[in-house]
Image (cartoon, rainbow, N blue to C red; front, side, top):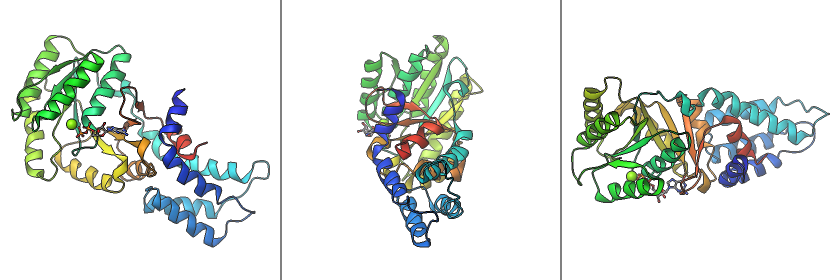
Length: 304
Ligand SMILES: Nc1nc2c(ncn2[C@@H]2O[C@H](COP(=O)(O)OP(=O)(O)O)[C@@H](O)[C@H]2O)c(=O)[nH]1
Ligand SMILES: [Mg+2]
């Protein structure tokens, strides 16, 4: 399977609804009013958001069918160009992550979105790029969270700095960065707790982690990636809003695109927040993370 097929199979659930919706639009010369309403409805159902749905419907209402192409091709092209126009400027490559020996990356997001799993997968991707990586288990709220990160560390053969359940997350982050710096690691990936229901505590926790890592490296943390679960649909939007108040976000990773017909949510988030997009999660295994490419996403979304 090449990278393209993986995207397509990962996003196939989203693609089915989008492409069948598009296929229903293939009719004679001019798009009827009732079909345009239908289009707007199915776009909203696939979670692209009201604004995107309206803009796209507007574009389709002005469609000029080019007789050399099939109508289907014209419609797909409009759709794909629109997605690329919004999301291409947001592509964030691994090379865009600051090099800092180590570059300290905080992984944020609510419980269950896939933070720990994404750390494992991102670690593997970075290793494949010949980077030396280390994990910091700063989600000390539950023992299970530390164990889960340890399992990932074993799986991809990475080192991990941890403490006991209930330990101060900031002290784990401090120890991890100290070790990472002394031992010339390239990247430190720090897992965090996601108790958004206690926003004040979470904010304090991020503030404290940020303050203590600066004692070792005044430029740290270099990145904070927010993990979002595509299957949660529109609530992902309020999560971005909430986390932006807690700590500055420098990149988005969206997980579980293999398990949803609502893959359009990434488009809504890109359009609204214009935050860089780092990668997409397509499953639970170690190779199931793809660096984000707007044209791959557009293609996969349309099963093109
Ligand atoms: N299908 C699928 N499952 C995922 C993906 N990423 C994470 N998961 C699963 O989602 C669940 C929660 O993940 P976890 O990393 O523990 O989330 P955390 O609480 O944010 O650390 C686990 O069962 C993961 O295996 C993904 O991209 N696709
Ligand atoms: Mg976790």
